[in-house]
Length: 113
Length: 112
Image 1 (tube, rainbow over the protein chains, first blue to last red):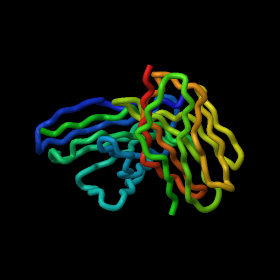
Image 2: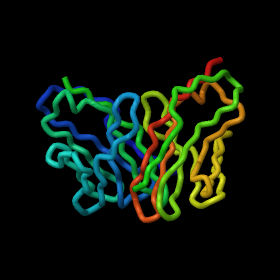
Image 3: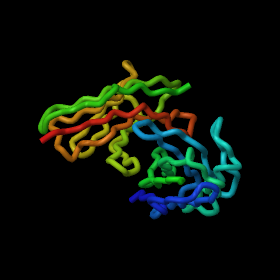
Image 4: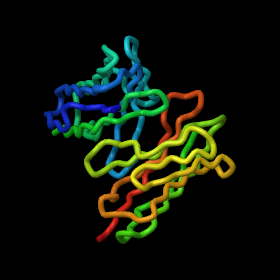
């Protein structure tokens, strides 16, 4: 149990385009989901906390207009990287809260050319 | 605030060697503690957890004991395999918090 999926697993896009990443909790309902960014050989950086039916809470330094988060249902949260630039290239990981524990998705590798 | 300090890597071991990764934390109250493992190119998988003092989490031969007196949650495995090669993250969730605080991660490489 407690499986979280992400789609797509990899995406390559041109600079200036927008990319949407989906995060789904497959076998449990998650009122809270989290979006992280991970740079090579580094730990995870929390970007924002997504609560079903309300606005996301962004961490300091994360641009909410650039990283749009929508948590429309108890099993789905989406992260849209708007007008992506090469510096947005990274590994994006979501997690879903199941009680005390966060369960992580497999990650999405974004490459912006 | 809450923080986690993890032993720096990388750690390179031979198969069947004993593995220890140190993790200490700073937190108020009674946090929950976790070890996550990340295999190359993948997301994080929960390895084990402990939610109160003296609890021992265990999974796949790995163990960690929640020691409040030393504020530690060291990860151990008695006999590692090549398939244990991964990055290991110690994490903490505060008793009044929903966020996880992560350590920097320790890269472990097991050679045949």
